[in-house]
Image 1 (cartoon, one colour):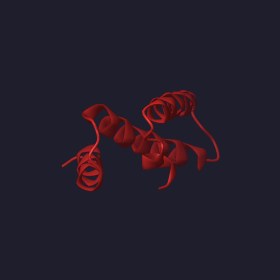
Image 2 (tube, rainbow, N blue to C red; image 1 turned 90 degrees about the horizontal axis):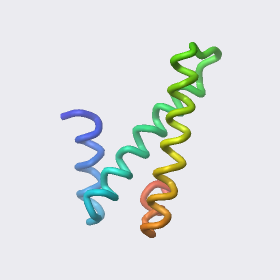
Image 3 (cartoon, rainbow, N blue to C red; image 1 turned 135 degrees about the vertical axis):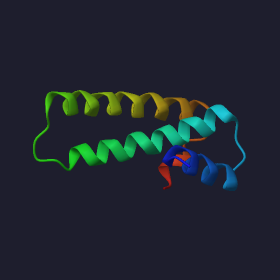
Image 4 (tube, rainbow, N blue to C red; image 1 turned 45 degrees about the horizontal axis):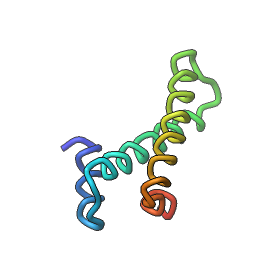
Length: 78
């Protein structure tokens, strides 16, 4: 199982939500992990800098999606 599969399974085991919300929660967790990984580095390559910006953008988009759906508590409380 991939990390995304495991996270999806864990999320689905606790709270029943739509597949779109489930994917958003898993994607949020993956982006947050990548964001944390990159922000811990002393120096970033150009590709890593782009990846950091992409992760920030995706986190913002997913935050807004989950907020609109009334499901923000699935990621904020963790």
